[in-house]
Image (cartoon, rainbow, N blue to C red; front, top):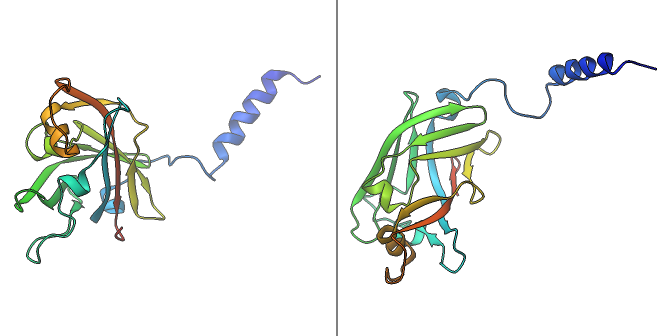
Length: 182
């Protein structure tokens, strides 16, 4: 009979040598992910299923801006910063959200300001995005941790009245940014 003490280290050795599948052993680098990504999905889903989702690409962001305005996009720079630019649906003003990028294995995290344009877009303080290198795409799904947004910001984005809503609305954000367009 074989000792379990021999089998367990052997399995650990095999797992360590396996280079296929799984996550990377090193974090993404700015050079790997730099570029200008199209905003393909940006939807806030309240935890309370009685409340409607807010599709920010139709309610806050103009996805067909005038000729002198850029398409909604996020630029990831090699210096570890980002610049999200879009035309506001209501005012037709060019809006920007800027911040820093944290690099992880197969993910980046965007640090977002808690006021101004980031609040109108119902962003959390930190947005964690998974990277698909083959598709040149970042995604964050609605299955993440719920976080609160201000009632007024949610109501404006969802196109509903604030009446009867709590002071803050908990929910999650579904996100997709694509380097090759939507």
